[in-house]
Length: 248
Image: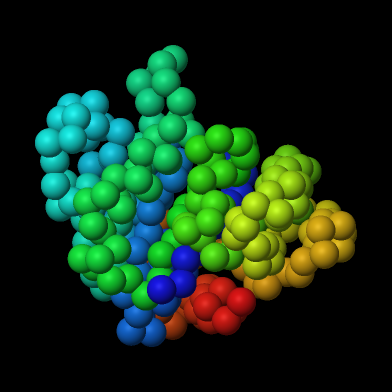
């Protein structure tokens, strides 16, 4: 089983990218699990074609521990196993704690033993890298971390913070940095800025995703590009990236 955590600033296209990676890898005949580690709980929305996945925090609030694994997951496109951590009641609790609870409950309820995924993706909000948000990096969870960024300043800033966190955790047996994914927004000097980021943290760009309106068209259909437009150049970009991730 290969386990990957994908981090990035909110709004950078992280969940869209992860969902397309899940779809591409499932098309290669692999059993994939995608776990949304973001309070918005919308990581898997394209995989499930808009159908809601019960969040772990909602289940805990409503039922304590009186729920089954089947309540926590939903099978989507190509039987991709979808789960969502969810978030706290606004103004109360800690979103990071939701990630910890979700990952612990998935193990406790036997998710990995039952579904036996070949590949697991943790889709993690990267604006804050502390406490529960660093959980997928920890030993026993992700093997590799990939950071998604564009050339926009705030995106670069968030990506740098994630890389700093990983550098601080390197002696704890945490996941290693697998590389940077450039999700292009066509800003000035975009590749140059991201290459400078890579140089600073001794890593590399493992994939470049061009800006393409077809991504929005697929989202309007509540589908991934890989499913909705399998012959498009954008789908080919996701497939190429998926193979790079698998081989990292």
